[in-house]
Image 1: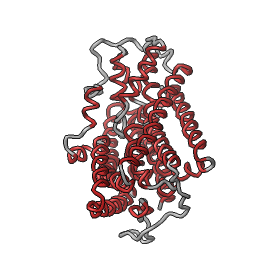
Image 2: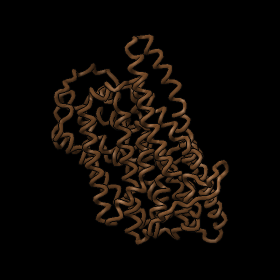
Image 3: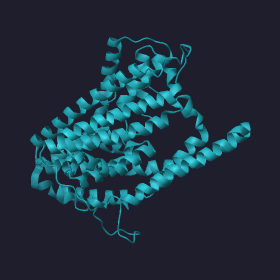
Image 4: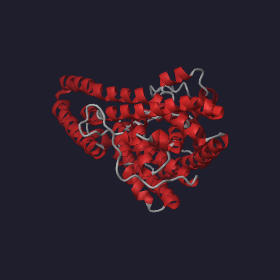
Length: 443
C-alpha cells in the first residue's frame, strides 16, 4: 500500500492542479459572476481537505503520548533519557542556527525584495495576523500544561511532550508496578498506528482538493508575480537539504541515500498537505523500517516537531528580511543577527500546521519597526512556500532521529520488506502503518 499511496498522492497533486487551473482560466475572466463560481468551488473543495486534517489531528495526541511514553519507559531510567535528550537538543540547536543563518545569508546575497519598492503603509495598517502570543515570558510559561487533557484537546504538541516526559519518567521509576500500564500503552500504539493506516487512505483525495482549491482561486499568475522570491527560497531549501543530508552522510555514510528512499512517502505527504502533523505518522513508520529503534524515534521526533522545524526557521529570516528589502528598509548586520537570535527563541514550539510561522514573523517585524502589513505581500504565495518548508521539516526531524540513534549505537539494519497485518476491509491485508506491529516488543 505504501508505494501505491505515493502514486495516488502524486496523481492527486497533478489532477488537482489541472482541475484548479482549468476552473481558474474558465471562470476568472467572467468578473464577479466567475468569482462567485470559483468561491463556491473553493468552499466545497476545502471540505475534504479540512476533514483529512481534522482526522490527522484526531490521532496526533494519542499517538504522540503513547509512542513517547512507551519509548521513555523502555529507556530504563533518567540517565538514558537525559543522555538521549541532551544529544537531541545539541542537534536541534545546531540545526536551528544553521537554518536561520542560511536564510539570512541567502536573502542578502540573492536580494529578492530589492526593487519591489513598496510604499510604506499607514502606521495603523495591520496584516490581519494575530501576534498576541509573541511574548517570551508567555512562551516559557505556556510550555507547562495546566491540564494534560486540555493539552490533548488543543493538540498542543509542546505541552503534550512535556506531560509525556513526566509520565514516562514516572512510569520507568515505579518499575514492575507500572508494567501493566506500559503494556496498555504498547497496545494503544498498535491501535493508533492501525487507525493511522485507515486515515492515510484519504490523503490522495485531500491533496487533490487542496491543490485544486489553491489554483482555482489564485491562478498561476500569483506564482509568476513573486517567482523570483519563491525561486530564491526554494534554492535555499535545496541548499539546506544538501547540508542536512551531508551531515547525515558524515554520521551514517552511504545509508543516507537509503534513508531518503524510506522518507519518500512522508516527504511527499508533508509537501502536498503543507502540514508537518500529517507527515508525522508516516515519518515514524519510515524511521522504524530504516532501523531507528522506536524508543528513540518516538522520543526525538515529537521533540523535533516543537524544536527542530528547519524549513520553517529558514523561512522566518528569509521572509522577514525580504519584506524589509521590499519596503527599502536597510538593516545592518548587528540588527539582522539580533533578529536571528530572537527568532531562535520564538520559533521554538510553533505548531506543525500550515502558516503557523507567519505569527512569529509578524511579531518579529513589529519588533524591528518593519511594517507588519508587509506580510500580505507573501501571503498569496505562502501556501506554495509552506509546502517546501514542511517537506524540509520532515527531512530535518528524520535526520535528527537517525543521527541520535547512531550516536547511541542503536541504529539497526533496515527492514527491506514492509511488514503487514490483516486489517478489516483490506483484502491484501496491508495498512500504511502496519510495519509497527511489533512496536512494543522492539522498544
